[in-house]
Image: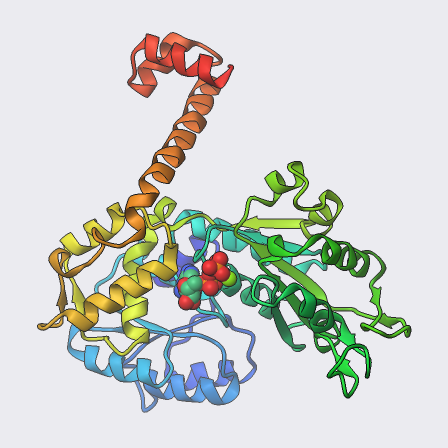
Length: 408
Ligand SMILES: Nc1ncnc2c1ncn2[C@@H]1O[C@H](COP(=O)(O)OP(=O)(O)OP(=O)(O)O)[C@@H](O)[C@H]1O
Ligand SMILES: [Mg+2]
């Protein structure tokens, strides 16, 4: 039944009827996910499959199916490295979302299965397969670095190193030698020749984090490396070549900064051959329950439960600090929970410092979303304002005044 259902959803399925048969097939490898019952006919059960698959092919995620009575076994299995388990009876959608999550997060731990996140991940996977320079944009805490690591691990140079450089954290006068290296005697204290991070990243990926914070002189130098694929160490003249894949990230609106001249346009186009934008958490609140459970598990709070009203409260928050902020609020609540239950009262999100200053920001964002909505509805109604006002549930006059504001 599962085979048919999954095939209808576009999955390639190989079904086997015993643990022994599974092991024989697994030896040849080539599977992306293993889905197995814990109890199987014969002497080999789901746990054995899990262990054996680790020996053959340690990264294939294993999902175990279990009946209510064997949940404790499933928990054991998670400790032994099973990716997840699903309790019978389950519906197909539950299983599908689990499978999708597994495929999309193979080798990384990007959690979430909202349609918005999945389509971003799909785009990122496509980018990973190319050798284009990838630019990851998104608000602070949305997972840009996590995504950059995932892109690296999915790319042709995944066996090479992943070398991050935080352009905002390293003082401008040191950054150049950090990036390109320095010859002995290039500056006081340079008592030996040092390789830079572009050299370290040879055969792998260099991750230029917070690239929007680069000062102008370095912007020019980076542009040259991206164009010519060559550079020289500080104080040196030897021309060095780099084959490093370049992924950049920024939480600034880089395009805007090119208009004000703060960021070089030519560099912007070069680093952003393949842009990927991570949505803020408030625009994919469906991911909140999964993320919450993930962070609890990750920090040893597996037995802590979260009430329905706590989830509602979490989903309603504006999340200026995105996933990072969710993590810290959830973990604080877990630490505070006396009875291992996180309910709405224990969640300290109303009195988070940033919240107030961000009301204005929140209003601005809401306005932007409304404008986007107005544009879309107008397009759908082929410019019919009366109809658009009806659909938008605003008065005709309100709509007209907003259109005037928007210069539509
Ligand atoms: N989808 C996700 N699944 C699991 N963890 C996540 C996810 N997104 C973000 N995180 C976690 O949230 C934290 C912030 O993520 P990350 O550092 O990648 O964000 P960022 O966009 O680079 O933030 P900043 O702009 O502040 O540098 C990390 O601890 C990361 O592991
Ligand atoms: Mg970051």
